[in-house]
Length: 353
Image (tube, rainbow, N blue to C red; front, top):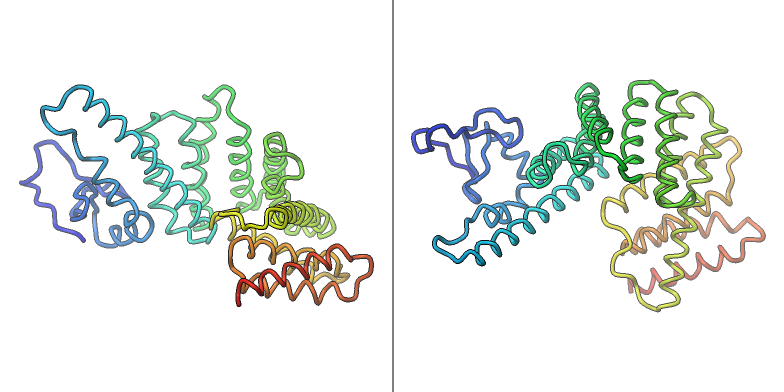
């Protein structure tokens, strides 16, 4: 997997730098021969995070056009290499998001650094396409408690956005959401709420006020209000999040009922984990309230059951479906929800037979 670098074998003036820390490298990946590390710990961290998945692609990207080929062939080779580079950036982006959703922040760093480095090669050092990489690196550092490092990445993201006229609302909502996370971690709750309010504004402009993307900002605001000992406001925001997700998931389930087929993929792994954590947190909060609302708890359990069914985890879908069935038993005027839960349990049960 690794080989010691022989300095005498390297071209004069070429410095081999560690993939993760940019210090002088001592080791080389023997599979791709283009990635270097200062020590085995950094190599193992990179391999576990992203390098195992992109190692073959790096070989292909660094393979030059055959000597003496026609100009048209060289142009074709250049276009194919560009496609591979864009695919590499997308892979690193998705892996970074996956690690963030799992809260494995140490694993985020190598993938996000690769994402940033190759995005710079493709788009330049000041391009707005770099902002998602800066935000992922900031989130990882917030999770690791390295708030000064997170602030540095966010400063770069803010500067890039300021230099980009007409920056998309998607980028702006992501920027303010991450800034809100940083300020909340620093205990600056007023400024955190301001950033989350901006997050909700830009997300609603892009995706709609009732969208699940927008509801993520409400969820983070609720967390801040809880820290400020304002549970009533938090409860109101949690209810908004619960309603958004339940409506969205019911629409997806209706689509399955009407078509008679299961959609190929409603959520990727990162989205599924994030939604599970969000809805699970609200359900736990609701169950611990002085005056719990069984109707809201039943709706949340039903949402979690639908989520896991759509993610093809029928065991968890049954678990939450049965929980929703118990919660709704003592309620009146919930016939539609009761029927929906019953249909879900039947569907999940058949898949496990």
